Image (cartoon, rainbow, N blue to C red; front, top):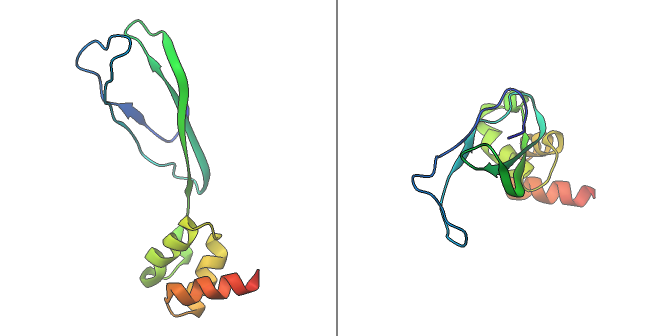
Length: 112
C-alpha cells in the first residue's frame, strides 16, 4: 500500500479462502494525511504468501486546513470545497455572505 508517510492504511483480513470467481467483502480504512493538499492512496490485493494480484486500486482526496475559517462557517466552507471551489474563495465568500451557502455559491459563480 502506498500513501503519505504519516498515514496508516489497514484492510480487514478475509476469514476464509476466496476461490477464483467467488466474491468477498472487505474494508480498507486509513487516517488522512496531516499536511494540507491533494492526497492519493494506492494498494493491490496480496495473497497469504505476499504475492500481489489484481488491479491497482486507490482513492484521492484533499486535506484542507480550516484554521483560517471562523468556527461557525467551517462546515459550509468544507461543503464548498467539496463542490470544487478553492479554500480561499470558499472562505472569503462564505464570510462575505454571512454563512449563507447559496449566496456564497452565487457570488463565486458571478465572478467566473
